[in-house]
Length: 231
Image (cartoon, rainbow, N blue to C red; front, top):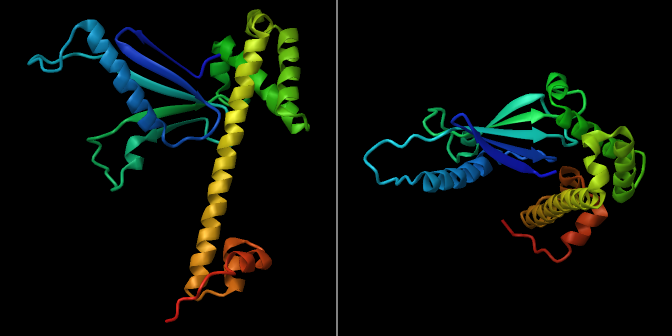
């Protein structure tokens, strides 16, 4: 149960990656990954970039499997050009990541063709259901593991590697919680900074409260030591 895997088949270099959170930076991430993969490929092939002969390289194929909680399309493409500081529609510089939604109810035909993927989706969906019922993350994982063993998902792998599977899942879910906290804390700091800046420039406490969706008492507390800039 790993987050990414790459392989070379019939002159096509494919990298599969798994994400439980939406990440618009996947094309840039994939570009870095493939740069490393191509570097290793050239070393193994004994090729040198200073050669006057064109070096043939495998076609890249970058696919991201997504099964996060945020609702996303069934199959969509992320482009590196969307991250460019200045809009560029020339198409001369591009790198893409194809995102396939593997949540329950999405890409059903794909699940039917790949039992391992089907088992994984059923297993992770069971964890979500357990958490939504009020269980702690650890309890939700434990119960889902018991259920997966009863259903013989992954052909008994979870039963054999129960401790390792649980540890990896706990680590993954803890990382997600950390990310949410960082985003929440960052938004809070930005709101405080904005409130102080608005007030310093003469914006009323009432308007700041309404604009930032912040209680008036909280705004007063934040701007208590701020000096208003006189026009």
